[in-house]
Length: 292
Image (cartoon, rainbow, N blue to C red):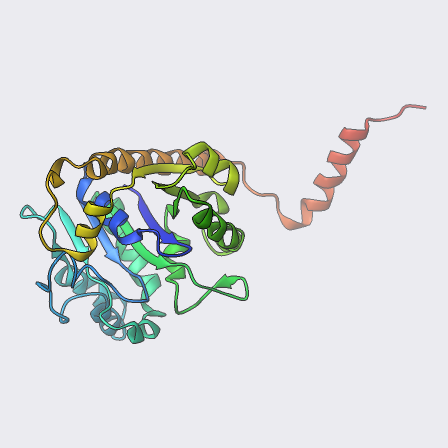
């Protein structure tokens, strides 16, 4: 199953989207709330049921003892989102000031999430929050960069509005470069469209030069419940958002599988010392060979 990181250029409903995907997946699923700005599910959907003794920050404390300590502590810091325990949540930070303590934690947490994905068969969704850049690079504290680099897919959540697309245009080049240089490749980047506004999927993809992997309907009432909690809206279980989220999770899985196959069959990169030879061969081929 894939590890999918969800981020945004600005508030575009990343948490609500991640929750909808987690709750609707046909597989067992896990949502890691890794927004350095702090988590909102604990006080929102869960209405304060989870105290500050459970969650992401405690994995950072465990990691100071060693990677094995984090792995051993991981299960005890998950919260079940359903009675059967098929939907799990790693609650996020309760204080943004704790974000600086996570720099050493992200790589080990990425390893644990991939174990949950590959060996335990979970769909993994990472709520990475709002993307933060510094001098054109991913901010080392305000963005969980190592989680994005290790993810099978990194989905930028956008809305079909001119404002949302304008903000996305500014971050996509830096994000694509970061994934190329430090991650599994620029092709890990895709879009998840919230269908608010005038622009449809094909228009968004063309405008941003990035494929739309999945789309979800604009459903403010259900999205508000997923993030703020309280009484669920009428028809919540049959809502278009949750129904489309199940389809979206299947589309995400299919995209991750296609990418994995392409990586398996891609030709190996040429050794650096051969680059000049290959370039000259290409030029001769383009220009033809003259016989005197």
